[in-house]
Each structure stands twice: as structure tokens, then as C-alpha cells.
Image 1 (tube, one colour):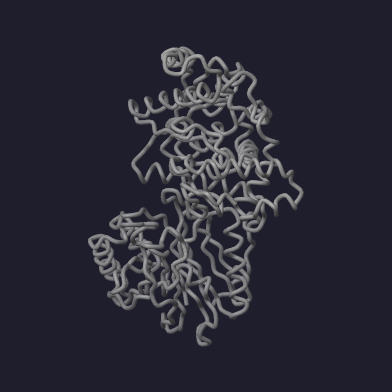
Image 2 (cartoon, helix red, strand yellow):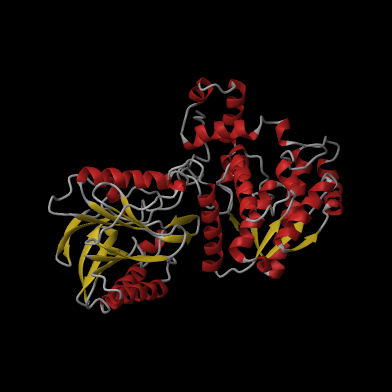
Length: 528
């Protein structure tokens, strides 16, 4: 059997555009002599479609598109993922198209992702069908993780999926495939999405695993791809990129961030981005990712020093902007800050300098950025990181603002890893001074993050245990971390859920993103 794998970048709701891509891939598969061509789960609709899956007109358009695609399936079978309306609600299905018509629906039984719960209903699960004279098991989405005791007459499993990227998720995916293929003695063909879909980025990396658990075809990561796999050929095991198995996956994080940002902009019809450059590591990385995703001609930077900003912060930001070749403006906020503080004297005058004055600076910078967005159409990018988001070390309506946060799911230490990777990739484009300076928001004279916290390598290690691994404080303390520090960090995390509820969309790059895999009540007295 010759199997065509069409790894494509779909857009949610663009049924006409997705249909055109699918038809083009069907035609290519026919030209290259394939017996069957596979597409990802919910390829026709794009995913996650959320409440679109409840709209009858949306589902009817998907049905009509299936008929159109089927008309091209005269000498080939196509397996297309789409939502379908059944008696008990909308289900995610693999639709078998052949001989010019819709032949069969195979629906997903296990609805496990939060982005699907409440929008999709459970179907019947894996089914065996005959394609090109061979008996094949077709499985949709997370039904693959629940497979066992597959029909003995089946040699090949087709898994159409929508597996998002997240640190550690890719290695888990391939370990699962290896184990299932080896235990069941089956060949597995995984067809995955690729591309950004709002807060999610799909990595692609579709593959074929033989009955020994060896990968014999591996498609590109973070790119569209097309391949023909001949089951009768001598398919040798292929080399697996180390990034799939190592804990150090910085290169994949960078590719995911670039693709996620690019697709967020292009699929929404945006073209240009604005970044507030502070001279710090976070905004530097966001600017670099924006240039790679959108082009330097489409990125603008604002440098907005206050009277508390150091001279080197401005010079470091200027150096980066020049290295990137982007347009930038220096817009001091000192006068505006003084005016606001003086105006507030009748209401809050006579009190000591505190977070009030610090937050005024952050909010003034957001006013400047949003003014540029409103006047020129440059979309504001948020420059947060997961450590600050977790601890609440951010200002509502200040540095929490923006249309999109591309780095908000990366810890501070990961930001430094990413900066070093970018410098290796782009000839030290981020000045050494930005990498070497001690983290500071410069909101009052001499302020440093270390005034309140231990070094970020300690903070992030505790946060990762607390958030990613779900460990209790006692477990973390027993692992050797200072009890007072653990208690303080835990308290800061628990007290700042209200800020995370008001964040812009954050690109999900970890396996446990705030608001998705980790969603806490806005009012919570449990506190453990």
C-alpha cells in the first residue's frame, strides 16, 4: 500500500481554504501513485473550533465540503478529519472518502482535552476498514492513547490527530507509539496538524512507526510537508532528532514560538508588531522572535525610559534595535509620570513611594504602546514570562497588556536559554550586556528582582515542581529547598490568580499552561 501523508497548516473556520488545500493534496497523491491519503483530525474545520462546533450552519458547510473533496477521490481513498453532527451532538470523525462519495464515519470516543470538553460528544471509537485491499484500523485523536487488543487481522493503524506542541509532549508521544507498535506488533501511521491556532501551536512531526517500534518515516516539524510511504518498500529506521528526547529543547521552543506568532498575525489579518524595548532579556527575545516571524520591516520598538531607568538600559535597547534593523523611537515618560503623580496629590498625596508610583510607570508605557497600535496599526506584543506571571510580579493594565504573549509560558531561566540559542543562531544579535545584567524592572532607584527573591534558577526550580509537576510544598521542601522560600513562592502564586485571569492570550509552549492545564478558582480559600 502506498500511503500519502499530507501535513498541512489549516485555519479555523476557513472551510473553503482548508478544502482547497485538501483537494490539492489529494490531486498530488493521485499523481504520485498513492492508494490512500491521510489528513489530520478536524482538518476541514481547523481546531480548536470551540463554540463553532455547536453551530449547525458551520457543520453543514463541513458536510458540503466533504462532498466536494469526495468528487476528487475517484482512484484514491482519502481519510479526512472533520466535525460531524450526530444524534448525541457534534463528534470528531475520520471520514473515509472513495469512489467519489462519502463511505464511512469513524468517530472519537475519548474526549480528554479541555479545549474539546463541552464542545464534542463521545463517539464509537476505533474501527477496522478495508482500504486498497488491506484491513486498517482507523483511530481519531486521543483514542490512540487508549488503544489495546487491536484486531489481529489488522497490520496498520492510521491515527489522525491534533497533537499540540509542548515541552516534553513530543517525547511522550513517540514513546507511546513505540510501546504500542512493539506490543501490538502493528505499523502505526500518525498524521498530525501543523501551524498556529491562537494560543496553540501544532508541531506536525507526523511519522510512521514499524511493528518493531522503530520510526521509519519522520516528517518536518513546524512546517507543512508531504510524503509517500510504501509499506512494501525496504523502509529502514530513520534518525530521530535529539530534541525529541532531550530535556533541552530550546531550538524547538524557538521554532514553535516563531510559528505561533506568525500564524496568530497572518490568520488574523495582522501584519505589523510593536514591542516596548526595556533593555532587558524578555523584551529582547520578543523582538527577536517578532523579526523572525514577521520580518524586520514589520516590527517597531518603543524605548520609554523614566527617571529611574539606567543609561545602559536605553543604550542596550538601542543596540539591539540596530542589530535587528528595526525602526525605533525613544519616548521618555518622566514628564508624563511627574504630571500624573502631581495630579494625584489631592487624592493620595503625603504617602510614601510604593507600588503605586511603580505601577504608574508601567501603565504609562502601555498607554504609549496602545496609542501607536491605534494610530498606526502596529499590534502590541506582550513581553512577559511565566515566572513573573506565576508570582504576580507584573502590573495589571501595564506590562500585562498586549494583543498576544509569545513568551508568557516560558520561565525566566528558559528565557536566558532562548537568548543564548538566538545568539548562536543569529551571530550574537542580543548584546552581551542584556544577557549579563541582573534582572530588574527599574521601577525605583537601584531596584533588582533579587531584592525580593532568590536567584531565578532557584525560583524556577520551585515553580516547575509546584506547577508542572503538581508537587505539594512539603515535597518541595523535602527535596532540599528552603522552607521559607517555598512558602513565600507558594503564597505569591496563590494570591495572584486574578492577574492571570486578565492576561492577553499566551502561546502555550509548556505541558502545563496557566488557564488551561492549570486553572484555579478566582476565589479560593483552600490555599494548599
